[in-house]
Length: 197
Image (tube, rainbow, N blue to C red; front, side, top):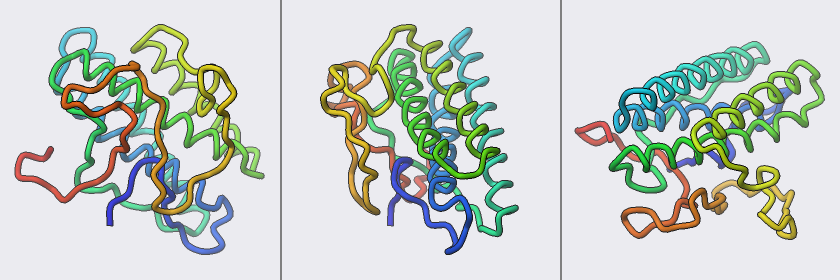
């Protein structure tokens, strides 16, 4: 069974933070993987930015794993590899992927920010702010007015997708990807390939 960064991750029944904490962890697992790819397609200042993003997401991932364990849950392990929403061939593709990753992780933390625990709300708010800042650093322009809200705001939907439902992500560039796919396809784990991609 494949799982995307935006689909629910199962945590043990009775876990105080519910599935939102598990979904945030899944988003961080996917982000760490994606930043490995981003780093491989960049150099110079972009590579330094990719390394900083990788380190930040890895630290948040480890923090979420600890929180889940402290609450009596079992943190989900990452998939062996993830299917990216489009092929990353050049630095421009890497930048586009980085922006998309940060937007999706921000969305995962927005759900966690609604938890009853004030400590979790604070962690989620800070993490979402960091993601939004990184996304702007990669592509300094204002996209959607609020993650999950369309450009006009009329298509704002607060519904949470059910297990296995596909959720279209915002189109970062407004154009088709290099292989004729849009940037709105989900990143999903796949079986490991010999080259690790």
